[in-house]
Image 1 (cartoon, helix red, strand yellow):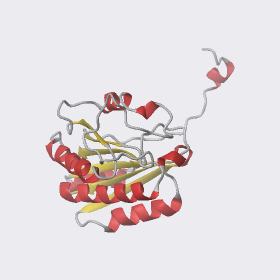
Image 2 (cartoon, rainbow, N blue to C red):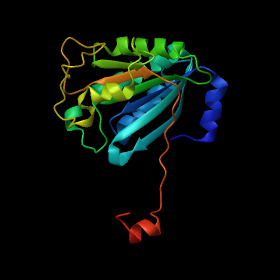
Image 3 (tube, rainbow, N blue to C red):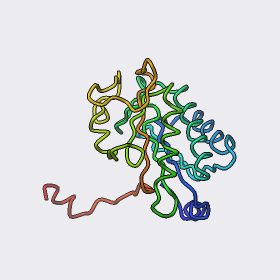
Image 4 (cartoon, rainbow, N blue to C red):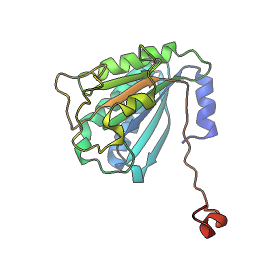
Length: 210
């Protein structure tokens, strides 16, 4: 979720953006993550934070210079990985890790190269903490996020996560842990999601089978 003002800020920066999805809605940890994203790295700015409490999932949108965005993203991801336990995560939204997904994108234009390079930096920096699966322009074959997720336990129960043998991680610690799970990291055109509250149509209430 976002608003017009942060989007105008994004365009003004003309750099890259990272959306970091962490598997928590805990207010105390989110305050620390936001403070770290706002003040931890010169050249990167935290633009929006959206928490979906029923899903125990939060997204942080960071924008700025590619190297600064990568550094801020890694800082946020490492803090979340240190504080959260995937085995205790209870929510209906699918995920494979405490830092479930990191997407890097160009803010304006279609040149994915800077975002892809930043995604590789992020993946390599997280390699000692969580297994990382690359996708999009960061993956040598351009593997999509959907394909990557289908090859992991993303759509299965997250508790007791172990690496899927059919999909070796692109970066991984020597001993992957079920506590942290894994993370998808990729580079794609910028996508911003919106949550909209819809009022049920009277027609479908009267004719639920149609």
